[in-house]
Length: 373
Image (tube, rainbow, N blue to C red; front, side, top):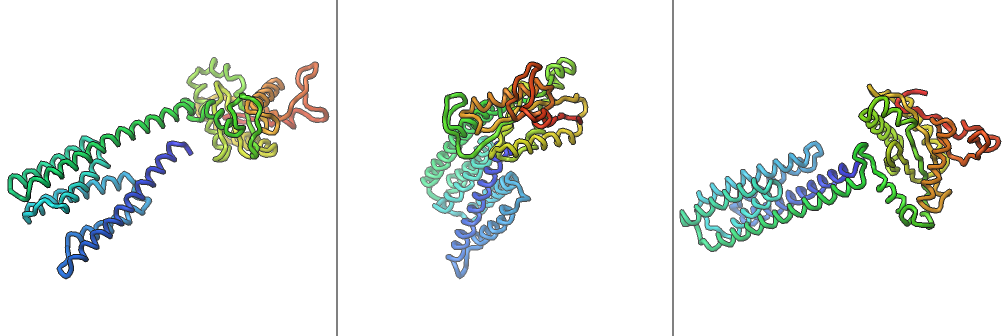
């Protein structure tokens, strides 16, 4: 799953938990207020408690998105602020601690969920109405009004600072994603792969010998055969579409804890966790079946791939592992392309040959991209 999607899901889960706590606290507090003023009771507090309880099913329901919950809460704040002003004027209340707290809650909701402009507009109208009621109609002492205004100003300033920090963090996360992502295919890039290998070996790629972690890994270096011919014949736009299609196919063939990265040009690297020879051979066959079963998108040419495979147990560091896979990829291409090589082949006078007693076919399952063999 893409990292940005995971981040969005975590953010939505956090917002739901926040709304759940808010509704539960609202029910408890307003129910206690209503019960504390018995026998007459406080029907306004009781009504707020009932409405807060009514919001709980929407908060818990996955069918209601977090964005809709935001809209619902904002509308509740708008209606609540309107009723507050009407009730404040109708009953001739003085601006006390309860009224200041109520106004503060409206500000928190607006500045937390709306844009700064919309929140400032609603907050400004509410505070202007309070000024008119307190000063124009003599409802209460103006000193609490000043304290309330100062508190609301602090909320606005904190909201502005919080938005700026959030934007900076989002920008930093975006730059980090861009630095580790190939812009064409959307796959992790070479730098991302090198970081994963460094985590496994405990040192940057090529930084010298080190002991790899206990869990073995495997590498498949995949290269499109005669890709330059594809670009020269069909154009670079079609070539880019071939790269994107291959990246999607490879990603669909591996598990969630494996990594498919674009190494550069027409080369891709599959970093396989818990890599063993049998697993790599099985993955090669799986890729072959996936590519053969895949209907070729309209306008894409028939191409094949060559693969070089290596295990972490065969190399002492990340650079050695990649070099070994690269040598085997070269041998697969030298042997005729459209095959996978997992063994060191010996040089003969006629070129490349398989180990004694074995054939190239034993080490070279044919792979056919976007078509059939």
